[in-house]
Length: 235
Image (cartoon, rainbow, N blue to C red):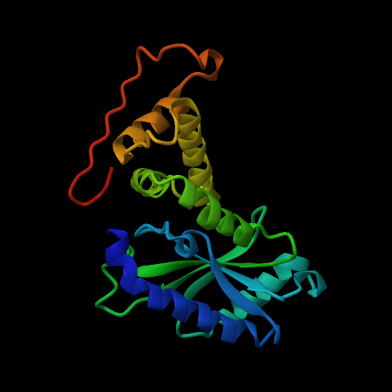
C-alpha cells in the first residue's frame, strides 16, 4: 500500500488518539495524548504501528511506577469498544500494545485488517516526540531521498519479520538514522547537487551496511545485492 492509499486511515488514527484521551483522562484528568513516530512524520507504511504518547500521567506517583500506571491504563482499556487486546509489554521503555478495529471498507488497507497501537507514558524522559520533530523538521527537508528510501527499507524489513524493535528488529527511527547517515555521507562526498534516486540510495545503503568494518575503505568486490520489487510493493 502506498502512502496515498493509506490516507483514509488518518481519520482513524485521530479517532484513536481522541478516544485514548477520553479514556486516560478518567485516571489522569489533566493528561493529553499525542501521535508521534512514523504516522506523525509522514513515514508510515501499511504495517506501521500508531505511536501514542500520554503526557501528564505522572507515572512516578503511581503504585508500581511506570509499569503500575500502564497496568492501570490497560485494565481500563479492556472495557473500551474502540480498542482490542491491550497488552502490557515490559521492556526498557514499557508500553501497551493494542489494536483498533477498522470498518470493512478500510480493513484491507493495513494487511492485518486493523490499526496496531503502541501506547506509552511520558515520564519526562520520553524522546519520541523530540525525535519525530527532528525527523520531520530537520532530516526530511534536507534529504529529499530520505522518505522514499525509508519506505522501501521498511517494506523490506517487514517482509522479513524484522520491523519490530521489541522482537529484535529495527525500529522506524533506527532506519531513519541509518538512512540519513548514508545520504549525508553521499552529500559530503559528491555534493548536494548530485542527489540520489531511490534505487541508487538503496544500493548505497546496502553497500554501506554490508561492508566489513575492518576493511571499511576496501573495494567491495564480492558482494552482490539483488532486490526485486513486485507489484505489491514487497521486497
